[in-house]
Image 1 (cartoon, rainbow, N blue to C red):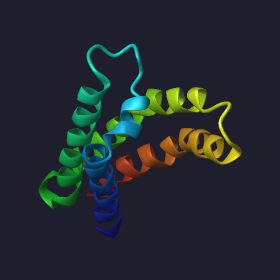
Image 2: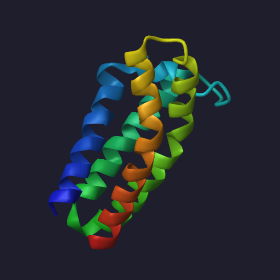
Image 3: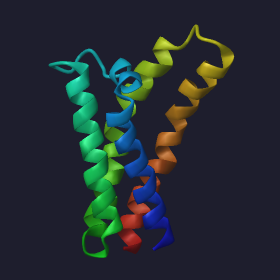
Length: 118
């Protein structure tokens, strides 16, 4: 249960940040997506909030964990875009951008583990 609530907290925090500070998220929306980046920022923030609720509620936890895993996989292209865009940035910013790439694997696994252990 602690793992599920921690995952819900991570998702909720990120979801809120998409609305409170949307500009950094706008910058990493892949250009290949139709429409405005801000729309995608808000949609992904709303998805994170919805998945957070699903993970937090025991009755929907299995589906929420699967949705979390899918969401973490779906945002990978944005992390790739960030890494490419920051390839000439300061070493600290490059470390953040490059560090996000392998971080997606344990996040996906976390969602799957929560779904399995509901």
